[in-house]
Length: 178
Length: 257
Image 1: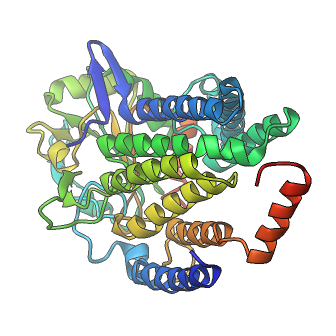
Image 2: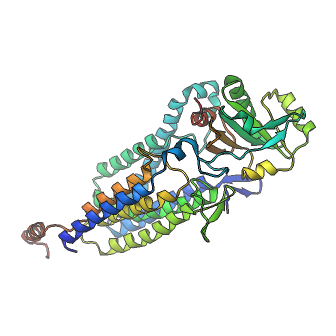
Image 3: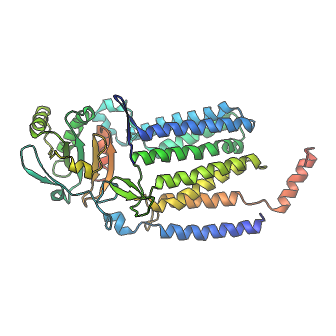
């Protein structure tokens, strides 16, 4: 191909490139608030709403925490990696008390079992019960533990599958707090 | 379809890190094979790649340690814990490139030929990594009602990771053809950069969320556009005068024209 034709090709690539890049930009209101996106268990989407009961029978709803960053963890007492990360979640819930809510949704276990385990381990953050698995399904939880980091506006900013360590928890918290 | 964890008996293997390992192996094996064909010992590609990888992992991990030191201080055992997310990618990538580059410089290898040999494997590796990202549900596409949309995280979406595979595999084949026919070293590497740039620039807007620069412009799309323009300028045919000069240089050296 001649050099002149090639220069023309570069010019066309530049024009098309700029046009497609401009057309594909993310609208500012979506970046800030996830507006226009449906609730879904994906980064950038509003977190799906749910209401459950705690082992003590109190009602719990995610919507009531709007305005506060939330660490939403899915776990079960039989899951060894969930047990290993629980002290880090407990420590974060203490350190950020009143600023970040740590919630651990228990998957499909009876209230008595969860209550006994959390009391024995000294876990004080709320552990609402997802006995039917409905909330786990809505959040597409395929493996335990899975943790969602939700910002003040209720938008999911990070999803982590697997056990969290203290440093990883600090890294992920940085996406929703301060 | 999502398969973030492969359960093999009692062993749970995370799909994405496994795909990254496979991708690295495929890239190095392809690079070594092509290097031998271009007159460079295949071991040099393995050595340059693996030393870069080792440096990248060490620096990426150290950078994570420094960035999150207050948390590590409270939990010293996690310093030796390995986790695919406990790395900072940019410092690691820069260190890896620097060490691989130093290996090439120290062994006086022809840089353009090394890059030509490594380029197709790089595209193949990225395609395998994208397959892993698709299985793990990472960086999902925007919601779509198209017949080929797939369910990820409970929503039907553009299978962006597969779009990228569909762009990278043909680019891999094209770059192999360029490598076979090229007369000037470096053309295959520039062609690979062009192919990769096109795949980023074209597909990034179909992702659910992207890192943005200013005014909502997607960072990776801008990088893709820059790669396209740089590669097109580098691939531009030489001016006639320069060709004649090179031909006369060759004939004065006694080379066949």
